[in-house]
Image (cartoon, rainbow, N blue to C red; front, side, top):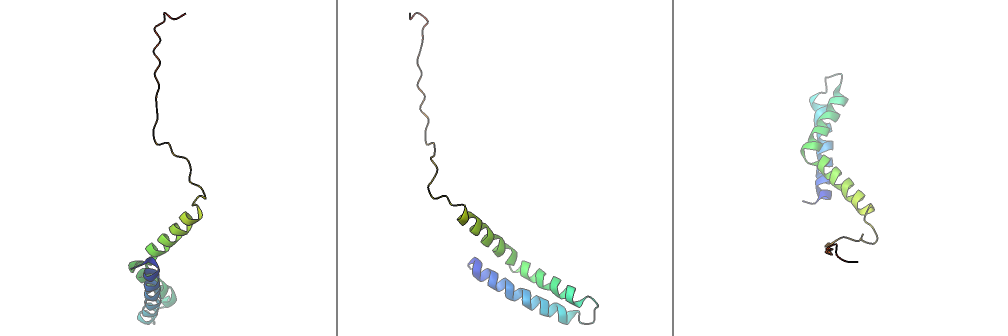
Length: 88
């Protein structure tokens, strides 16, 4: 499942969780808060947080892609010159 589909699925779970929480706690003084918490719990459980983080990471990495690649060091060559001390 792609991250976009995962996010859509999690958003549906969020709405369903809010509705379920409101119905479940309809007699409570804090029914709205409990409904939102239930929705967030379902959103996270169905991968919504992961999908959001992946989307943000992809957007940031796409923004930072340099136009030209930096030069990389692929090997190092060492030249050794021996001096004996008898040279003039």
